[in-house]
Structure formats: structure tokens, C-alpha cells
Image 1: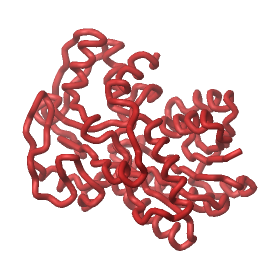
Image 2: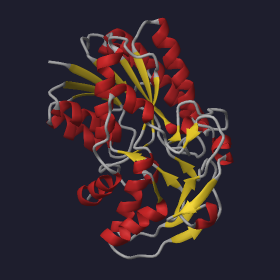
Image 3: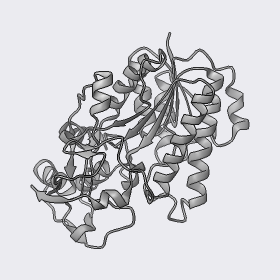
Length: 346
């Protein structure tokens, strides 16, 4: 039986990857320190379907060494990390904590992968792209959303931001920690001859994100709407025109499966890929609100015109390279994602 190892297995992405691979007949193993809200609930759900979950802190290598007899894996996926662009800026997640957590967990995941001896997938983020350069892009407003005008900047087109776009600081403490980890992954894997891929994921969304805005704006917005809680547009005039794209974790898992078949044989030259829904899955908060009004209930939205640090008008990833190289197709549309959250979140 094929085996797979997932870090952060009790988080949103990790648990969805576990369900996906379990459904394909894999024996799924993983590790989690249960620091995220909702992760304790996922432990029992995963164990009940036969997933092997180790409750350990990935930043403490003495604990990780105890897993040295866990071998013969097809793939190692590292998705344990803090996930909010605001991490590192408040008392519950200091700057020291985010860099220590994200960097050490990545280093130790690499050491564990070296012991397990299999290909390595690193889940990075779209927030490694430069805020300064993104702010220089020109936009127009169409159908209550920021839409990209024709720009002459390198690494951006009508399809979105591609892998060649600037990663110049500032990025945010979170974005910088992910970019540092990308460098670490490349150095470690090349030196130790470990096949690897770095996936810069856009907004991952679906049911099970526990209704917090730092765990997914779509889930937070739809579930707050269902409960008739107060919501407001923040920044850029308070209109809700800010635009992102989204991707369901199962589509991410489908791509990783395709990647694993090629990277072990070292049949790909590139190691960094944008993993996102792309232009077809992009939406603004205003457009999401319209969907909620039509499908849940009618309510008013407040506003705050002041823009917060690290906020962006627009960030849509160009996923063309991943689609072309891996013959990857996205099966779950943004509207299916919205509906999934509406129906399946309690």
C-alpha cells in the first residue's frame, strides 16, 4: 500500500489532503501540534478513518527523531505553518514566534523527509510576491471588482501574477518567513539530492475553516453572513472591490498527485509553481456579498475606508505553468466552493 506523510495534518489543508489520499487508497500518516483552532476536533475525525496522527511539535527535533522508523513513503507534504498575513504583528503571534515557528518547522520537516527518504512538497504562499510592486499595478473597476489594466511590469499579464513576479520586500512578516523557507527547501533538497517542488498557493477555501478571517476570508464571510453577524469592507474606500482568486484543497491535492509522479523521476526542470484557481475563480468581496444576498439573506455591510498594513487591492495568480506541465485541470469552481461552505459548515 502506498504511504504519504503530511505535516500540519489536522489543519484545514492538511486534513483535506488526508481525506483525499485516504479515498485513493493511501495509508496516510501525519504530524500536528494542535495549536490551531479546530485542529483537536480533526484528530478524532482523522483517526476514525484510519489516519495515523502523531501529536508532536515540529519545531522540536528531539520529538521528531522518534519517528525515524517511519519509512517507505511515496511523498512528504509540508503544510504546517502559521497562515495569516497579520501573523508577526500582534501579541498572540509575535515576530519572533512566526519566524521561529515557520522556519524551524520547515527545517525539521526536511530533516524528517531525509530520514523517510522520499520526494518533498513545500506549501508556500502567494504572499511571497512584493506588496510594493503589486501596489504599482494599474486597475479599473468593472462589475464591483478591481480588474487589471494593461501593465508593462515583468511577471504579470491578463492571466495574473506569474512565478517571475518580484519577491522584493516588503512582503509582510508572514510572506518573508515563507520566502526564507523556500530558499531553505531549495538548498537542503539540492544538497541532499531530495526531489522537491514548491507550490505557491493562493487562497485555499472550502468548508471546515472554523469561521475565522485568518483561516479563510470566504469561510469567515459566508458563515458570518449565515449567522447575521456584522461585517464591513476595510480599506480602499470601503467598497469591497479587493479581488483574490480561490482554490479548493481537493484540486490542490489533485495537482500534488500529478507532481509526485514526475518529480521522483526528475522529469521537471522547474521547482516553483503557482497553485491557484486563476482568473476564472477570482472574485471581490463585493461580488461575494452579492452571492450571499442571493443565496442566504439580505443584509447591510458596514465600511472602514482606512487600509490596513499588508492589504492588497488585487492578487490573482497565473496558474498556466502548473496546468501545462502537469496537465492539471481545476474541477471545483468558486461557486461550488461558496456552496460547499454554505451547506456543510454548521
